[in-house]
Image 1 (cartoon, rainbow, N blue to C red):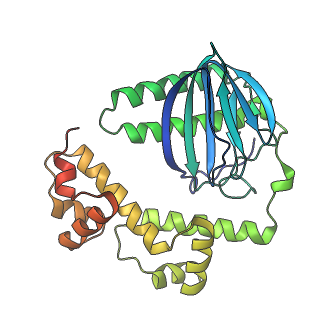
Image 2: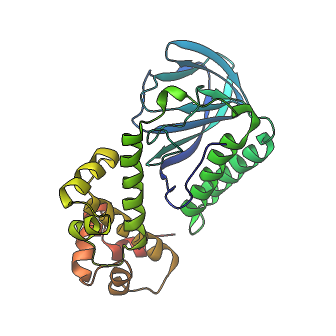
Amino acid sequence: MLKIDSKTFNPEILYVFDSEMVGPTAGKNHYHDFFELSILIEGQSEYTIEGKKHLLSKGSILLFNPGVYHYEQAFEGMYNRQIHIGIRRFSIDRFPRDFFPLDTTIVHLSEYEDAFFETCTEIVKERKERQSGYDIILKALVLKLMVYILRDKSTEQREDKELLLTDEKLERQQLVDQIKLYIETNYREDLTVNGIAEAFFSSPATVSRIFKEQLGESPINYLIRYRLEKAKVLLDSADDISIKETAHLIGYEDALYFSKLFKKYYGSSPTDYAKRPK
């Protein structure tokens, strides 16, 4: 099985949804700049992947790496139900960030098939019920799906060797993973680019450059987003927490500054967010 560093493996889940399709209908040819996992949980669908057609049925798992063109269509009388999951900011073994390291787009599991689709059922249930903290549960379930695919005998020896990183590129990717983990571990502290660079015996310019190259944003922007995501969890899980206390718990001593950041990123103040129906 390919190696996953449990300390730094913390993917961002962009979306998780299930949908039904009744033919005749067809989508548009497209690709993503992130990894998408699509799962047929009922029925049939025809997928065109990089110009090649595939008639797929229940139990098919599709792994769309960044840049892979695809679209689907359902013919007259055809029905299907699928789960679609967008994932980014992960790395597996010596492979590039956001790439699932198999040499095939379509997978049918063997030994872990039952466990995989039981987890899919849990995902549908969590999305439907939307209880407090459901997004955290969804992320855990998505990680289970990824591991089941990598564990299964059907994917053994299917690594795409052409994607393997050079030692130099792997070292840069691993450094960014370590910086990301450092931010996630110390987000309550007064972090600066200079301080982060010093912790990794590097320069602020180098840390900022390679972090943005790998993740598309600066270390400080990542820190802000991570803090605000933690704030949402606190506001979702505690009915009586104050805005000042929330700000303090995520690393901001100025509650007004925290409120302005929260509104900038999410479109509503933390007070309004906390008051919304749950």
